[in-house]
Length: 150
Image (cartoon, rainbow, N blue to C red):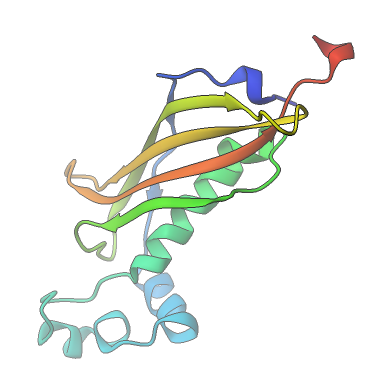
């Protein structure tokens, strides 16, 4: 298990690539964001996107899964007090391969609760062409290392 003290400002978090399929785009949209440009290839051609694309919430969900599988699940996470900024910069298309990177901006022990602290991280997700599709800045709350493990 890793703790707050294992993060450092300037640390780069690099995640494995994740391919997005047409089937999962449509399945997510059917359940959570049933707009025509997420559901129907022909209707999507007539939209401002010019073709089928993933919901921004789907893209954010993919990012969250990458975070849990590669960082949050390995650290003493206590959840998040929130997201400061989230932007969907360009559409995610079927067969796009997404790559997520993060940079730790700040690591701050809590002044009022000495067992925890906040890590502020800026994330950027790019497609296989290097084009930014999503940016997010968020805070994560993590336990501090127990004294007996220092």
